[in-house]
Image (cartoon, rainbow, N blue to C red; front, side, top):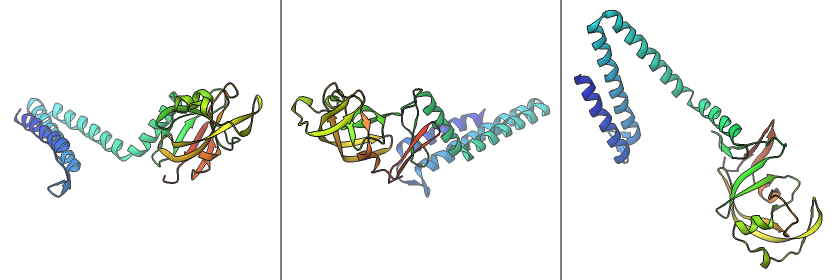
Length: 231
């Protein structure tokens, strides 16, 4: 039982170092030093339990060694393939929530196609939530009147002077500038956009004034993949 008590003390020390220490401890970064202490505590628990089992019966002791050996191998495997497992997890999240950007291990942002075949992209414009339709046919980012109002513009005071073609025919739109436009981990500043007249556009469009700033974008299967220049 002394081993278990010492393990608890070591775990407390690990938690204290992890949450309170800064810089280096014994020549190691504080988080790594805390991890070593926690690993030592875990190994002490293993050893104490195995010794206790051997005292009861040698067969139970060997069973304990086998159990902890398999567990240790599993933990080592999870750590070794943590990158691949994270990638699988992000894909599952993307499948469960179409439209929500998922940032991959390489920094790319992926969005799953909706059932109707379009890509709806959840983002933030001027620090407010907004959804777009991915549209390479749109020369600029285009906001609906409602979308523009939701991120801080007053549609009634805008100057509608730019001719545009929509699904409902030709109309006029007002030029604006988005201070920030963020999709997942990608943020672009001072993005040119247009605001459509009320009633002339049903969805916000993620057009070329944002897309042309990216390092690349592609549709791969049912996924839209965006890569920022810093990825």
